[in-house]
Amino acid sequence: MDFWGFLIKAISVIVVFFGLLIFTMLTVWGERKVASYMQTRIGPNQAGPGGVLITLADGIKLFFKESIVPLRADRIVYELAPILAMVPAFLAFAIIPFGPGFNIIGRFVPMQIANLNVGLLWFLAMSSIGVYSSMLAGWSSGSKYPLLGGVRASAQVISYEAAMSLAMVPVVILAGSMELQDIVNAQGTYWWFIVPLVIPFFFFFIAGLAETNRPPFDLVEAETELVGGFHTEYSGIRFALFYLAEYINVITISALATTFFLGGWQGPVFFGLPGLWGLIWFLLKTSILIFIFFWIRVTVPRIRYDKLMQFGWKVLIPINLVYTMVIAFLVALQVEGHLPNWFGGR
Image (cartoon, rainbow, N blue to C red; front, side, top):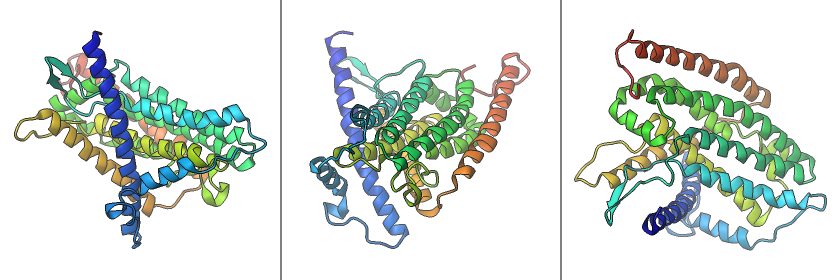
């Protein structure tokens, strides 16, 4: 990579980083406004137009607030846990393509930080690392309530990570690649193969709710049982990192669902500028999925923990496994020439 290539990549990382932070701030504000409308409340309306700067005000408040460390805490692990929550959340987003790319100074600039040939495995690896933050935060706090939240987090994420992985396998089989850009392109060429992905999309979204500890699967934080879960003993900027990581994970799950099941940045192009329209379609689809996250939080009550685990192991995983085997069997018949060329990438 020459100097200009390195410079373009560095600028891309900075733009995506700050763009994701701003989008996260708007997501927090959007959830508060949506919840207030659905519950007939006022919601944020003081900081900025329509209260849009309320998240920035909260961040400033938490940054300057005193951080209290419990006497019985393991100081090193206690400090490390919030970092383990934030860093994988950003790194998981690095593989997601949010546009077709454009040319500048004679170079093609992809609208994606890194197009890995094992993009799916990268996402799963980063999401697996993220669970360590909840586990270590609960264990290192020296309190029983965070410890119970950490134990719940480990069991919940392991269960639903398996279901999420199986839900993405049919996409990889049909597209014939684990590169996210190839998956988007396959959906643009063979757009109708989205039809057999309706069921995996439904299960992927449910598993995504559990992965991000969102209602009705917020058993890790359950205020009525565990006070606040794994981050009960955190305050100030350390708590803000956990809070921010949760919303970044919501954005990442929504963006990944858009990429895998909804055609990614593909969409109609008006008046030229395919890169701009690709970004618009990507943001629109992702925002709709984020709105569904908000909608579910406001309308669906928290389920019991045993029901949560039972649903993951006895419903999601078996159905996903059987459906994946069916898709693999159909593609194998197509490769052997016994079926028409229904799917792309083969």
